[in-house]
Structure formats: structure tokens, C-alpha cells
Length: 308
Length: 253
Image 1 (cartoon, one colour):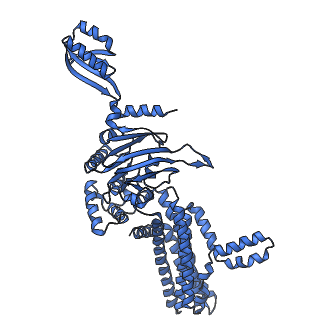
Image 2 (cartoon, each protein chain N blue to C red; image 1 turned 30 degrees about the vertical axis):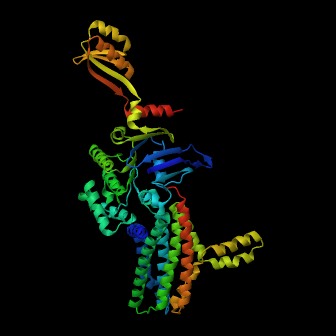
């Protein structure tokens, strides 16, 4: 079963009766169970709008969305969802323990189950030491940890995380990354938006990139980046002057190091051809490095492609 | 369970509201200051004190209901605490009912405390407190429940300041609906007459809850009348809460 399906999901607003550009324009997505999906885009691209539509905080202007087959407007759909908003806010006068207990009640858990949830989440997010501290005294990172813990109350199979790494220090980011990877191992479905592309690269199976409310690109991360080999570096040994001169026409650049002679070509095919020629002439292959585009490069290209 | 959880939290939140304590201070000051005004009216002091004490319970109760009630839902949207709550398997009307129940519980406590303090003070000064005094306090509480329903409705529709102004206006007009009943006959214009008649029927008649004069004079009021007034308030409040739920259901947060 698909964990999330959206069909032509759109959201737009009006100002003084005049329509504004759509915040989200005909979003079509299908996210399978046990998948980790990264939702990327610049500020104002429509990521939070999409997430709010999935959590029924906004009403769509057109289209529909379903979670595990249930329309998102129905409470049954949200029974399976743990949601972490960007910069989560909780009642300031509650302690983390009381906060988790409150959300446990909303989830319909009885008292022993709520206590069990607290023990589990306090250990997972290191909340034990601050269990009696009021939320009002919390730093941003502590609130974020509590927010993630609250999202996991009731052990939902789907997690929707809006900028989960935002405002975290390196240790906090590492903790969150480890927890997300652990949840992935537990076969949870995770849908999250992020600006931190290195985190997305490490965690996600698939990504979607939103540009000005439209989904520009969507696919498996390895496939998306595979298509974009920017450069191939071929390192050869035993290359004499004559061979180097004959190969130089096939390359964009050449340099020498202790490892050997480095030839740079612009495609995998050109690299293979160069290796074949060189080896026929007695050279030895030391390394063959396709320099792939990073997610950041890809993201930047997508933004440019989406710009008018 | 979910409604109860929200109600419990609303109660805890409202108890921490500083406005509550400021208003309670003035309410208690008015109750204990009623002796001074009662002293002016020779031979009628206890009667006047009862009147002033119950009026203080009503006035400060209404102010608490308006100032706390009109911020309840709006504050949750403004502070974004609502996001994680509505993302749970919760229907929006459950949230509205929880908010209403929490504030109603607080108002129940406040009314009981103020009425209890007033009754003890009157007894301490040698007066007597009979059943009708407590019946009047009960109907004041029911009136507060109706004002709270208006406050919750406005809180889910508009800003707290505008909401408070509208609810206070409804409270003032609702206490003078008898004037609205007489006014149409003085209008030649049929449209104007129809509008005033419509207002008379649509706006709540808060004077149904007002038995302060009877309480001050110790005149018995039948249980049937009290029950009828409570039923009227309950039906009206239920209608307002239903409207608040529908409005909130359609709201983007």
C-alpha cells in the first residue's frame, strides 16, 4: 500500500479578491511504505504548505491527498501519522513528561501505555535529565528534541517531519540523523523536508524538488545523480610522452602526480575509450573516478531550470 | 478522552492567566466593599450587599469569560501549539468542545469561590443566605456558559480584541432585549421594524438568567423556572458551539 498519495493537490490564496500565485500547484506524489522521501525546495517553494495539507492543517483549493488509503481530512488518516512541524511549539507551562502524556491522551493511550511511551522516548531523545523542567526554559534544540519525541508518541508508521534538523547543533543533527536511520531500519515511512542537503543525501531513498509550488523533479536519489556524471578522472601509470600526446586530444585536462598521469574527460564513454587506448599501448590503470554531481549541484540546476 | 485532555489543559492554562487574578482581585474587593454601600442604605444593608455581591459575580465572571475565552483558540493558532494537536486523530469539534469545557470548569470554580466568599461574608455580618441566592448564582454561571460559547465562536473567527468587543456588545444588548421588543412599534419603516424584530429573536435574552432582585429580596423562584432558563442557555450554547465547530473546521491554521 502507498503511505502517501496526492493527486493534483493545490493550494492558492487570494488577496482582496485577486488570486495570488499558487503556493502549491498540482502536486502528484506517491510514496511507498518503508520509504524515506526527502522533500526539497527553497524557502517559499511550497514544502510546508504540502506538509500542512497532508496533516489537514490547510484545506486544499483543488485535488486530494490520502494517507494509507484514507482521505487526509479524516481522523483515520492521522491515526498513522507522527508530525514534527518546523520550530515546534508546546505549552510553555508543561514539562516534557507532561507534554508526552498529553499527546498520549490525544492518541487514546491509557495511563500504563503513556508511561511506557515516556520511558521509551525519554531514552531515545535523552529527555530523562530534563523531565521536570518547564518547556518555557528550553533552548531551540531541546524543543526540537521534544518535538520529535512527540511525533513518535503512539509509534506511528508514517513520520512527516518539516525541517527536522533546523536549529540543531552538530551533535543534535547527528542524534536526529541516527534516529531517522534507526526508524528507517524499523521500516517506518519517513517524509521530510530539509534545507540540509548532505543530510538528505545520507538518509533518503528518494527525493522531490519543489520550485515555486511545482514539483520539478522526483525520483530515486541514486538514479537522479547517476545521470549527472560531470567529469571522469582516469589515473594511468606507464604513460610516456608519445602516448600522452596521442591521448591529450580526447581530454579536457591533464596533470601529473605521484599516483600517475591524471586525464580528465567529460563522459563515461570517453573515459572507457581513453582507458582502452592507453592499455593497448602498455599503460596501467590506477584509478577510474566518475566525479558525480552532488545533490547540492543537482538542486542548484533544478532551481535554475525552474526559474523563468 | 481527547476532549477531556484538551479541557484539562485549557483549565491549567487559564488558571495561569494573569487577567484572571486581576479580575478576581477586583471581584473580591467589590464583594467585601459592598458593606460600605450597604451601610449607606439604612435598614437595607444586607439586601443591597446581596445585590452587589451577585452583580460582582456576574460582571467579573463575564469579563473573565470574555477576556480568556476570546483568546483561547486564537492563541493556539498564533503560538502554533495547535499544529501538533490537530495533526493527531482528532476532530476539530473535539478541540472546540475541549476548550469550552476547560474554560467552563474554570468559570465554575471562580463562580463557586466568589459566591461562597459572598455568602460567608453576608453570614458573618449577621445576614441570612437562602436557596434563591444560590439559584441566582447558578443562573449567573449558566449565563457565563452562554457568554463563553459566544467568546469561543468569535475566537475561532476573528482577533481577540474584535472578538471581545463583539461579545461584550452582545452581552449588553442581550441584557436589554426587552427594549428591542418595544422598539419596532415605534418605527414606521417596515424594513427597520423587521431588522429589530429579527435581532430580538436572534440575540440571546440574558434577562432570563437574571433573578438578582428575587435573590436580594429573598423571594422564592421555582425550580421549574431555573430549569427552563438552564435549558434555554444550554440549547443556545450548543447552537453556538456547533457554529464555532463548523467555522473552525473550514479554517486554515
